[in-house]
Image (cartoon, rainbow, N blue to C red):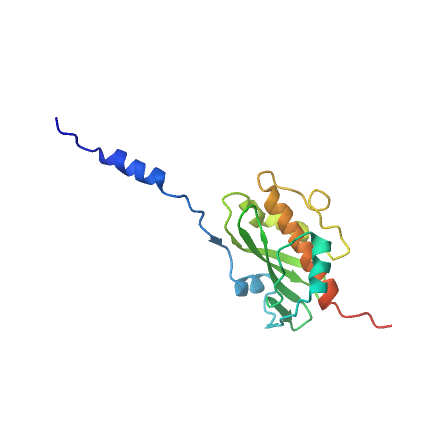
Amino acid sequence: MNWKPNHFVVAGLAMASAPIIAQAKIYLSIEQAQKLIFPNKPFTKNPILITADLQDKMRSASSIRHPFQGDRVWKGSDGSWLIVDEVVGKHEMITYAVGLTPAGSVQSIEILEYIESYGYEVAEAHWRQQFIGKTASDPVKLNQDIQNIGGATLSCKHITDGVKRVLAFYDQALKKPQSK
């Protein structure tokens, strides 16, 4: 008796043993996010040196431990800011952009890249709109002034903390001192 392999079984076994890899979802480039948040406004790159003291202040304000990169900061001709940051979702990094008005309130946030298998709902406009108008003096805390999304709790928490960190960055490094 000759045994002949069933090609469907062999293909199924090969697929079952292959690793499942989450594909990165790139929503926007930095340039596209800038044009969405601030249509028709010119921006220039404005890198900021992040000192250990500034990093500590941002960590205490937000609880984000991943270092902030000061080379992803752009200043608008009217004094507005575009800041690109990233936080860990559950396992992978989430890259997002925060547009700030010249007074330091959130104009908008945009998700640039999301790799996680779950929690992608944070990219939906109705959830991101909760941040509009927030400043460094607002709590910007999940389940306090920012609502959670069931099944996306870690992504919601980390993006919320990340936006708080960006607001603390504005408050500590970008805000012009009040004249007396």
